[in-house]
Length: 484
Image (cartoon, rainbow, N blue to C red; front, side):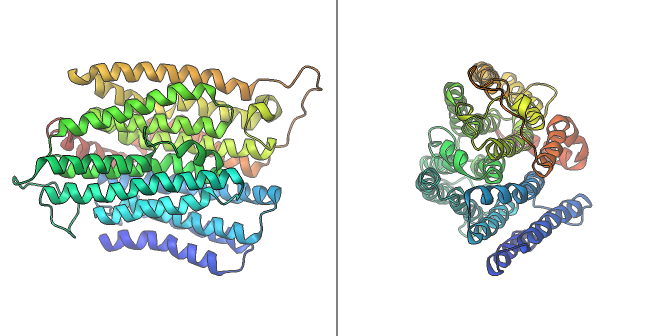
């Protein structure tokens, strides 16, 4: 099965190589179609039990990666066609974008499927480096600055993650070159070094995930990246880094005092919610607004992993629901930027609901989802996370704080979004004219809207056997002391 896990990302890497070798032109669209068909075939064959990832969490995260990568590939074609035309991109830059996008998706599938901690580190490094270049693809001054900040912070985190992982696993006598997911059963270990290593790994992968205080790269990178890249960064890459943290903590959690791991995850989760609540209300650019929202939601996933129990199930569900909502929102922000030549309401992206009703409706829907309004998808996962926190007496104060911060975030986004949707232009100017909305940009968003509306309830039923296996796996993990 590990051989299959190696070949699946290799198929996408092959498309990247082909894209880089062929002369730029219409073949890029055909390669996109092949990639979409490839991921769809993998989803179908997985659903038919023709192949199996290593465990239910790997299968769940792979489904999430494959589904929303398909949307990212789909949206890339109309988006990049218009972006390149508007800013005079040469064909070579478009070719570079597609090649790196294939590699980015390949790395994300590897994060989902690979079972060795060193390989997982390589996979998240590959996802980081490809996305760094994708952030800088527009080659504006702000994009290059954002890419430089991104690589500095996250590569420092990558080094810390590797050293911390080695320290934690060797301190508990886990054999080198056999760093799989099996829980450790030895009783002979060096607790302090294992704990220090675990904290270092959390800090390193936390930088990859954008957890506070390692988030400084995230608002700029999400703001400057092409919209399909922002969608994958927010919805998949950030969560993938936390999945690796979960794997590591689940492995060492039988021999390291898990209360300390629990407290670290909760502390970083609450700090992320606090920063998002403080900064969201001051944002004037849609993509930057959604970037701070991503910090909030990755903090919620960290909280769910820290609370454990039913909250751990909620964190797994939130990986799906957040990916659905944030993919819709970043794609929508990209459409706004294309149609209005800005995504800042101060610079003209306003009155969207009247001037571009389809785009405005999708923005309103995605914003309602991301603040957790029922019955939209994120409501259910957020409710499970908070319910898990309230279930354990020691965690109730943290759950109360989290609930209060979520209310503050709701108010901040509810106050901000109308500036784009409803605010008219200046009174001394004529009414702003309607803008044509290309169907190629709108249709992917409409399909995503269906996922956002029904995905929170329908996904566990649509993937019923997989969801049951996932809940069973996480429930068993939750029986081992406080978290795992």
